[in-house]
Each structure stands twice: as structure tokens, then as C-alpha cells.
Image (cartoon, rainbow, N blue to C red; front, side):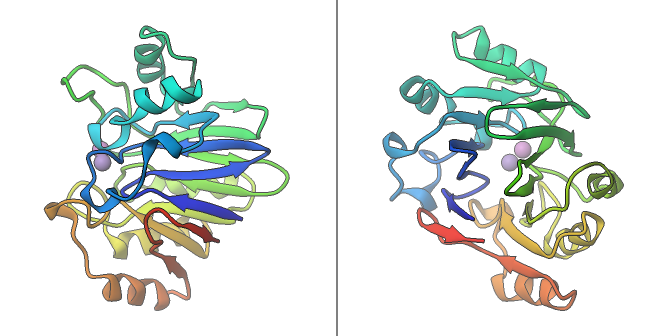
Length: 226
Ligand code: NI
Ligand code: MN
């Protein structure tokens, strides 16, 4: 299937006839300066946690598209109170949407809104329907809980994992995560956007190759086949 990488942790994909957008942070990302947020389609916006580098463009995109915001109770309610369509979901829960099933899973990180207010517990999403199953881990450390994913969800076709270190796991740990989740195709995210998370791409590729895994570091703003 095809997806579009908009930089950092922001991904768009069309599944089940709907446009799903993850963690929109574009206007504050110099690396994504060629992306026009007014052209990004969205029927649903899935938010892993409340940090600014994951929610900065939510309101602009949701206002234009009418997209439903799917996130933990605190984040969904926060946007609901501002008049946005939303669906609250918490760790361990599933919901069957018109495009497929979403499960919100654990992440080890923190979660607050840019103004410092409480944004619930951070998470990741596993999304599946008859055609595809994938995992967007959000911001997270390597966690043993990842081993639950292949026990509880269909076989993953691919997974989006953070590899930038400092705020999340690094490429070496993400490669170990790929064995925990039993997935051979990994799309890297949350790297290079700012100084703390700049990485060596060749080294990251080598780490995955040494485990017989494929690491995709997609170009920003282009459609990529996975
Ligand atoms: Ni974060
Ligand atoms: Mn982040």
C-alpha cells in the first residue's frame, strides 16, 4: 500500500476508502516546508499523545476537513470541548470504524499539551482491516509490552517506529522492537527534525539489515510504496 510521509511522525494513508492522518506537525517543521497543510486530506486524525510536535496542525486540518479526532480520553475531550468531532479511546481498547479496527496500545513516554496541561497517557495505534495491518508506535521507549501486539492483533504488514533517540528509542532498539512485534518492514520516524534527534542514516540502515529487516526512511511530501 501507499502512504505519504509529511515529516517527523506525521503520516497519511488511505485505507478502507478513508484518509487517515497521524500526528500532524508540519507548519513548525523546517524539513516539511514544501508541504502545504491546506492540501492534506483527512477523514480521521489519530493522535498518539499531546506534545506540540504531534498536534500542532490538528485544528487547522480538522477545521478544513471536518476530520474526526481519535485519541486518548483527555486529548479527544480537549478537542471535543473546542467543537471538533472526536472519538476517545484508551490503552487496550479497540473500536471498529468504517475504515477498519483501531487498537490503542501502550507507549512509554509523557503527554501534555503545549500549554503544559494534562493530556492523558501516551500511546500508539494498531490499525487493521481485511487488506492491511500496521502499527504506529508514537513516541516511545522500547517496551516489553510490544510483545503483546502479535499476540493480540493480526500479523503486521509494516510498523512505524521512532528511531531518533533522546526522546524515544533509537534505531538499534527499534530493530529489537521489530522482533518483539514480529514485523520485517519498518518505517522510521521522529528523527532529524531537531538537533536532539539527528541520526546517521547509514548506521540506522545497517542495524536493521544485520537483523534481516527492512528500514524505510521515506522522503518528505512524497507518496511511498510499502
Ligand atoms: Ni512526545
Ligand atoms: Mn515527539
